[in-house]
Image (cartoon, rainbow, N blue to C red; front, side, top):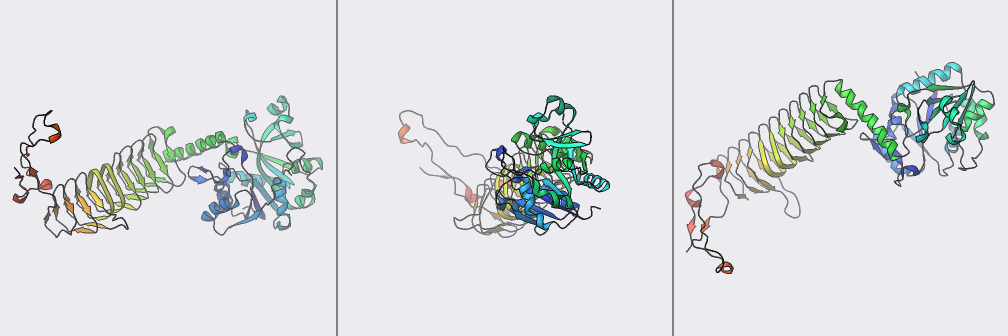
Length: 489
């Protein structure tokens, strides 16, 4: 256990090198804000934590409070005067013997780093312990260097060091420190303002400790685990590492990826074994995919549940929805906003659903909009069907009960109910409720005008004869004697 320790997370900086005008700490990596990664580690280790905020403090606090509404405390650094300036704000509030201080942009950090640092710090009774990493070419990254020669440890800027020193004596400073409380109480006020930056730097405490004979220890970890975010290139590199970790995790659990390097995957998802993920698929936070599913290329699934053995065909978008087991969706389907699709359903190409509940074994295979509807089981939705749910002021519900057959090119004007075992004829505009076991026909009667000419083309085009088609004995386009064409001379 990590006893008698508190943590301070430095989150007041302006993130100027990212060049976005916003704090980097609310940028997302694999669906989670950067600031939440180190905080999650500290919460898992049960370390009391204070976040030092400054620039865009409300945005940072809002992100944190959504996940940790009660367990994090805050202190504002009104004057941005450096990392040691931030630490001084808490000097009167030190309550534990060991003070962990770390920067906030550490999205790849693991609990092992903190535990190893604590173990070495307490075993050696060090005044200062810090995390470092080897990097073959640190010149391209925005890190200070830890120069270690014999027992002497100092932190320097890269431009202050020779090439030989960088290659043979240097490690990258991770920005993670563990101080003894007694050391900070004696030495923190001795830090002088930097002549170039006009700030107080926490790294100067390492130099002060070495010069005054305190014990200073280092814990070396892989560089990838302590990468920080200062530029968009670094943000991109970290996201690639994190996403690769996630993909390897799911591969180990029986998930196959077609082109893993093209898949966008967020942190908070689950995938069942035996599932296939195609190229360029986006699996966003809150998504749950069952076993033996097939997710074809260029699909986006956001905060949605996909049942076992379901298939999502290419170029489909599914947001805030539930798809039942053994169902087929797409291609080019748009399932969104509180849509619930039952088991063994088919939602085909260019079908959009919104705030819809669909029962088992129902099919809507072509070119339909189904919004604000309650649709039962064993229903057939003909191509071109639209639920007309909006009257210009508010939305209305369409109810389609079990075993209903909706003909092609229907407009269902809500509020309306189609009772079970009923049919609607092709081309109908349904404005009234349809009783059980009924056929509803709601379309204009066909009129053929024989020998018809458009006056504006009389001298240019021969007369065209409009001929009616043969009767079709198909219930989805059911015809009666009353539908027979009339002739208007």
